[in-house]
Length: 383
Image 1: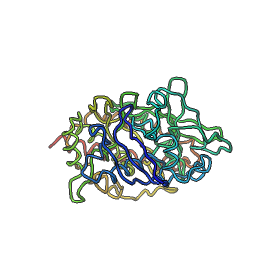
Image 2 (image 1 turned 135 degrees about the vertical axis):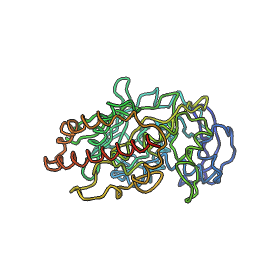
Image 3 (image 1 turned 180 degrees about the vertical axis):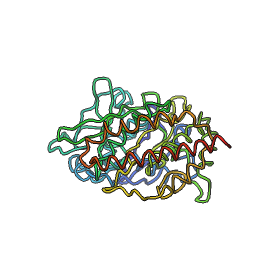
Image 4 (image 1 turned 90 degrees about the vertical axis):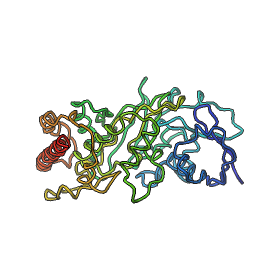
């Protein structure tokens, strides 16, 4: 038996689609607003395949550590069914789906203006929840345990760590480091859950009028031999996205500094006015947890600089930083050098794995990384 839905963009009907009882797309029946279709549907891929990919990314990935417990709590067979139970509503953008015979409106269900109840099962153990609750937490496409909460007028994302639980500490360290620069970034703080675990906390950067468009929507299907950096810059310029090269180069430089190995095409992107469809620029720099030896029980002090893996444009940071073409003098190396050791000493000892010996190694190797970035910035000035 097939099911029929309307993809909505706020209160604009975008398309109608038929799904199987297992939520697989049978066919798109009608495009109602081509202008408002998800941007990845403009890439030339078949509409059904593109929409399927779009919907899949509005669900918790299978690698999420606690997915089985979440599905059991909400009585869902998989994460796609779980997200559809909440209309695939998200706090990242303004798309959602509803049955074709439903009269429900954006004003009635969106999580930007309506309250929602915290459901800690998304981030920690919880025995009893009301499985009938709709929640934005069923549409967070991230591998780490995380959840949105409401605190008075603020909407805040809590995100846990994984193996060594270092990701929240890295988020906070890098955030505080960037506070000393003019770089547009998401600000993170440490919080402690009732069970004693530390998580990172940050305020939402989307609004009821501004939505997040991940870079993969814009990039479309890239030829493996294509220069991914140049291709993305060209596509962004065709969409009139401002300051694209400067902001991309800043991201590449900070990822080089912090050895971020997780800057995939969903971990950066652009802000767009969902009514006018006008792009405002890149989103603030966020998701800096997979950095600074986050997955190493014992830090390899002898690992050469060129061996640190990178995304999204090439395989290593030493290769990727060669792409930068902008003046990066706003990354004040002197200030970073001055404050980094103090920040490390303030933040990391709260994690039991960061012994004094590990902290000393982290400081020494990070300062080596700072000097490496300074050399790369100097080279760029000479060009």
